[in-house]
Length: 126
Image (cartoon, rainbow, N blue to C red):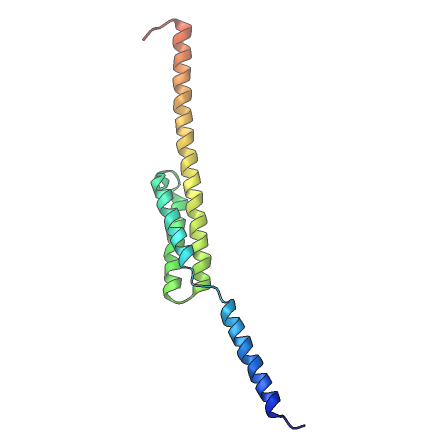
């Protein structure tokens, strides 16, 4: 069977179309994910996560550094995955830090309440 010019043209057109569609299907660079991870780290650090959630914030910093390295090496899928992990770790550090701060404040309020109750029972006016 002889291949005609129309068949070759159709095959080339299909190949070009397939390549164009696959190029459109690729994800953009993970710059938004990296930016979100950096913002999550700043938020966690602002909530004193270095003190209250040191392991989690350290994990977030390490994941972000690895994501930035992967991005520099043009490994965008790895960079995206690591940036998302960094965001998750930073969010966890933020939540644990906020929990610790809230628990400390609750303990302080409970101590104040206990002291006031003690004063009421003893009639002490200090």
